[in-house]
Amino acid sequence: MIFHISIPAKDPQRVARAIAELWRGEAFPFLPMRGNGSWVAFAGDDRGSGIECYPRGARLSPSPEDYPTGFQVTMDADAAEETGSLAGRIATHAAVFSPLSQEEVMMLGQREGWLSRIAQRGRFHVVELWLENAVMLEVLPEPFKQEYLATQTLDQWRAGVGAMERMASHE
Image 1 (cartoon, rainbow, N blue to C red):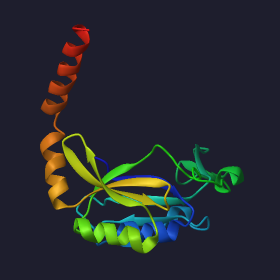
Image 2 (spheres, rainbow, N blue to C red):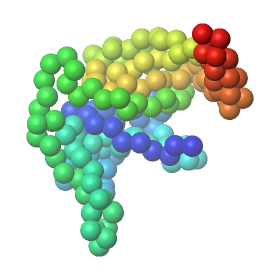
Image 3 (tube, rainbow, N blue to C red):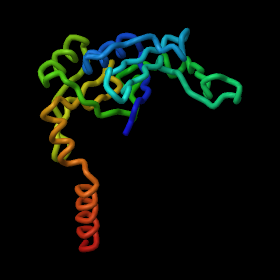
């Protein structure tokens, strides 16, 4: 179970507020990193689910043991200033549940000027919401959440991997 993740954002406050809206939660300045512009979105659920939004170009590194958080944040100006269609794109993404309807998620993306579309991931669907057109969230409104939960089990994965192995052995 994931309790929180962190992602980069050109405008951490805007991104955190949009994520909080997906969850009907709240966004706050991220107090452990106050002063660098980081924000956090909380779902307000019983797990404390959150997504920390760090300024693009922020890098985490281990810190001396006496540093209160156990890590330091530094800024890479070159990464923060990337331009072009691939600026800010990363492989890190998350699948998140939203109590919003599929239509409401799509409208949120349109309002913010971010790509949002329905996509199929094998036997389940997601709304791809591209935060700042750079970082992808796979949003699961209730019907998509049910598809996801029905297909993402250990038994389903074992069967799928077994089938692939059998096919490969016949080639």
